[in-house]
Image (cartoon, chains in turn orange, blue):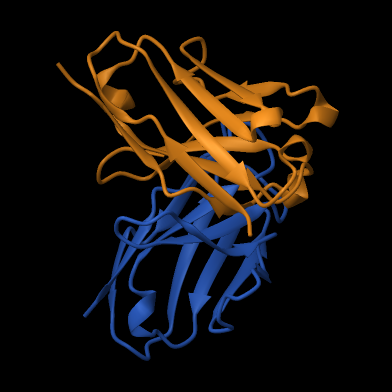
Length: 124
Length: 107
């Protein structure tokens, strides 16, 4: 059974840093892209970024709103993904989801597995 | 960036009703569209991908159609468990974007 479990959320001051983790199980992580999606309280879904699979050299993509501040990394040997968030702003307050696209093609890029999410609150 | 606009943003309906939600893209996206259902406090759930393909395990009362810039999600006969928020998503270019959501409530 595919599972994604996020952790690491919490309260952080503006300008601070936080690292989220996503523990993956039930599939071979190195063969899959993994994305992060966030949802501010009472708001819609916003794509944050993506790490591609081993075959694509683990390259990454980011939304403009987080580029230069957030970094996605992974350790396939630990079946884990990470979202390093620096220079946090109040508008980064959200539930952060780790999600798995079905496959690496655009036609298969839909998100068929989601974690339960972890809440990040940026406030003084 | 490709903008997705859902209509309506809010919909009130009764059990047994047929409802349709529309998603319009700011430029053509072929059939690279997915639909998700989200209930309060839960992660979104994939309903439909490639505009019209039903995800495994999703009831057949859900259907999707469209291509290019206009897409629809139809629920043929609303059930109590269908009251939720629905999002469309484009999967043809970065950044991946979602519609603003349609909240479906019980009348």
